[in-house]
Length: 146
Length: 179
Image (cartoon, rainbow over the protein chains, first blue to last red):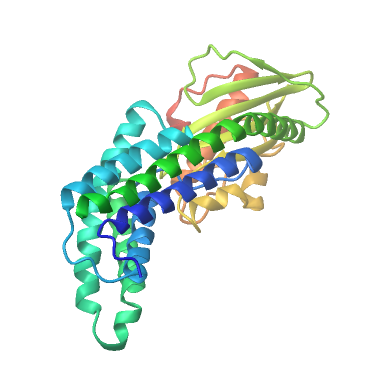
């Protein structure tokens, strides 16, 4: 069991890295494929997968250092797409800022929902249920801006 | 203690960035080569009988047209029109008389189950083939169910591509988005 307080950001970096690696592979070997755009829905999916992995990988993180989470998430959403050559300039800046904001909001909501669901046998699937509900919520909200 | 714990996420971040940078460096030449091959294959499929294509610079005023590939028996026009959830990029094969010999959607972010059907709905896409030079949803084109905006965007793209070859004026509202 991992006890590191910052393991959420470790999972975020790993999940985001794998997703962007998938984009690179798709561009190289299946250029006709249409992948989801780098937008709020993708950020939410990456964030929620990282949150679920964190919850299943060790004990609940009692106290987060929100400043460190914020800084690390901004760097993750800025550095990784830049290193992969997927985004540059203004689009990269927007992705990093939206990514950081969405990640912080989702982390807060996920933790709150999970803690309230985590009683008895429901506790085992609480992270998956919370992530699913939040993904649908983000999808519903994002359609308001279309 | 907590500062020491920061080493793990920072290291993961740096390793991920390094892997992505190396991956991009190695894969980008392969991506360019495969993209060119795939484009050539699509161009010859959209305009049967054509053997070689030359990309021409487009200097016209139609904002829907983004690239022009000329062949001996027609053109393949790349178009970008506004759909429901973002831009729709298409390639349209046009014969020298302005009729459509083929079309394919290259990129779109439309709704799954509705607008996304424009990618593969044969009965919708086949309405454009060898069937005139101007297309209007509700007149000579039946829209996809639940995806009128997407259908209009596709019709506009195809009309623009045809008009490029025939020289027709398509500034009327008949082909405007949502019109």
